[in-house]
Length: 319
Picture (tube, rainbow, N blue to C red):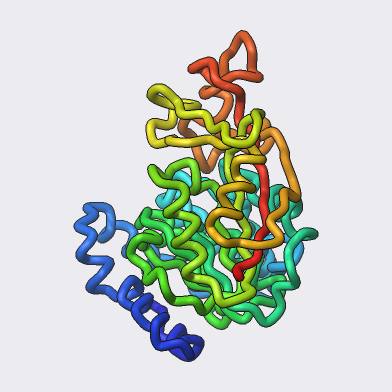
């Protein structure tokens, strides 16, 4: 796997352990039957050099003029073999990948509230295929490392990264639990759409804190519900058809959790309802999506009768 340049960024010895998640040995150890097919897809990608790229306003690599119609058809055919595409959108040489999530909308909501990313080393936990990591690079990050346990997402990233070899973005097929929690080397750590999947949200916050340098910034995005400080919804079984949702806190509860973990200057910067315009099925993600998880008689509720998805963004500083 093409991560050889990553070691040039790892000045902190504790970060070097991340490299093992980029090795062929690690990929093979996952025992995923789709891995040979995904590798064939990667090998089949046409060799095209982008005339230009845009990672600031979107993730666009080249244009239709950079390749022949045959090459473009070959590219699209290969990328479609990696469906479903959930985070994006992407555009490669005129091929637009219309992903399930309009991840660009979330980026636009949070970007005005971030400390400038220029020159920063960033960790993105639960990064999917790395869409936001590319946007971090577009904002000037010197390094953006994403971790996500789904090997399919790592392979999608590999296909995008093939055309951006010099961009300092890397996605590793690992969980936060497998990363050293005392790295303390990142300037900014993102955790978006992860907290409510954790059985122990406090432990998750402490793990994130252990990855941050002193004074570093945490960006936390999570499902929230209305309620007083101390309240968190614990679904009986599923939430929005998701079986692995444990706690959905109120905004005040989340702020208190952050404070109890030792973060300072904790603040809520955005709250928004997730709509079927932001998360939906597309030609690149043909399975059920948000609309299938809402009560058809009352779309403000999930099919289980819980309040519909409402997401909040919090910013906090490590002491």
